Image: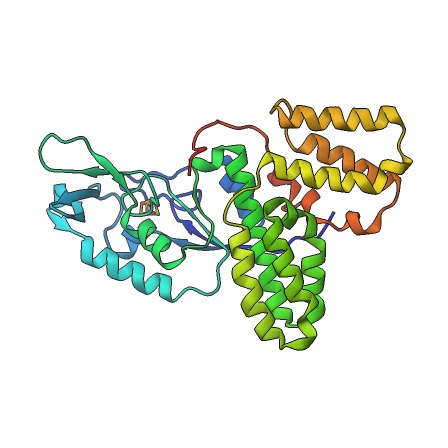
Length: 320
Ligand code: SF4
């Protein structure tokens, strides 16, 4: 098994860490608990940081005319400025982080879909919470998710791939050698091909032209492309192209029946009847059987620790 980097993530403190919810509760979540074993956590409870204590009257996002405010109606408190100031100072003092995992729908931590209470009888609209919204503004290209959306297998897999790949790249930056960048790009080639072929090629040209510029110049250009590449999960068709490409390594050595079996698995994946792991496992078996060293190192087969794979899927939260 490959050695994985340790992503550094900002985590809402009430997710598995501390009973700091307004009602004294804590959110238990199996996935977050498993993830904790693999990541470095910067925990934050913005409401505790404001000195609000536990338990406390609940906060709400409230529309007042054209502006949104963060209020604690039962305590008669307006938290808007103090939360805005806290978020600014906290986020600007962070070290390099690989992503954010925030409590869903909280008026403070929620990054989308937070209920907005308006005056009168108009139906409540939705907006980011005050801390979650500040995260989006300051880190527009970082992976940001909540425990609710991560119940969707596809969203979870993309989030994990993004934070582990970004952490891996931080290690390249720390290493500071052109060789480390070549290795990184090379072992991620097929993963990146699935994500975005055009960006993969542009990144490949930067890596190949390293001798003409400094390492710092190269990574300054490479990093934004990497972040763009990881913005959206790959489409099914992109994965199929990559798998067909890999199949090309082995095709001359396979019988007609073996090829048919693989193509049938690919077709089932295209139709959504089996997960990606099924055709991927077939390719991995060929990698072992024919001892193909280049493919053996590809992160596509294992972009994050396998004990985080859980194909259970609530089907919720598929839309971004
Ligand atoms: S959602 Fe955020 S502010 Fe609310 S308890 Fe959790 S960490 Fe604290």
